[in-house]
Image 1 (cartoon, rainbow, N blue to C red):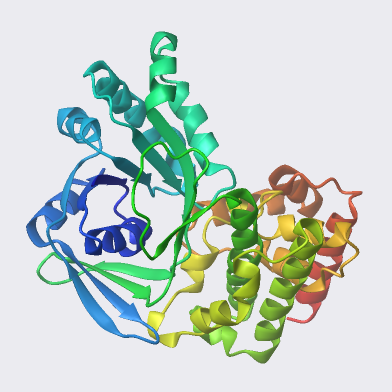
Image 2 (cartoon, rainbow, N blue to C red):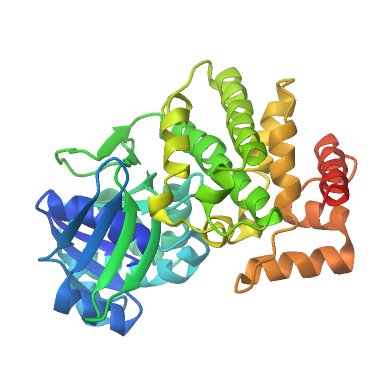
Length: 383
């Protein structure tokens, strides 16, 4: 298949691109930065895997185009699949560009189906991208687009810790040796062979909730508690006995709550030991700043910290470790993180109660708000 990947960052290159290229597909990256386009076209790129298997994969035979213009539109017109990997905050920016190229494809008379997979750490990402796309599609073409294009959600759980450029200008990605790409099968238009590490799920919404509330939750708790202790890397924080207990405790609290909700563990609920091994992988050199970045997004009401804390409380499960992660997140303030800077400014000027209500939609009288305030006081008094 001809597959376009929108976004040439860690996930686009180190999880999606390398897996699809090794399956033999024709891969085209769409990037906004010209130097990235030129580097991929000139060199391909390297993926260094660190973990149970250590190897360097040279990804060749792929190419790149700018994420706009006639060349991009032509690529979309001939594509079988498109993956977005641009981070959730950037979806509103790329949606009009993608809508324009999909419209060009429809007007050009292409009749074969196109599947768009929104590969972002976001609940209902496929339908969210679909709404953004259709906001830019003229109504007279809406039915044609709906008939020909499937908008699907996908998620990668491979930990991709860094993206650098070597002395020759080649992009070098460092990633864990393992990881799956899960996708929602319900809206898929085209017929294609599903090969590892890709896995199609018909219960995708529950599985993405499990990923956010277990894997991403544990990662975030580790990052925010590690930041409070002054650590630089995730594996350093995992070596701290107290932090390790809190990370495991938070994941188990979320796991129990999800089992109560769904009646069983689905995918990530059965993988906690494997996830913890990845967190402790020192070879990844995964930074706390990377894992914890964008705390405002990660403290949203249904995201990886507040979401499982509320769910656990609803089912009568003591969410003490989840609350510890929420409280620590409110102190996260590394240099170079605009959301962290904005959050700290909000807390200084308006206080914790206002910040939790504004960021997490939790009113001051909500029991979760009270638990977070009390835990924050305890953490500050123990410094």
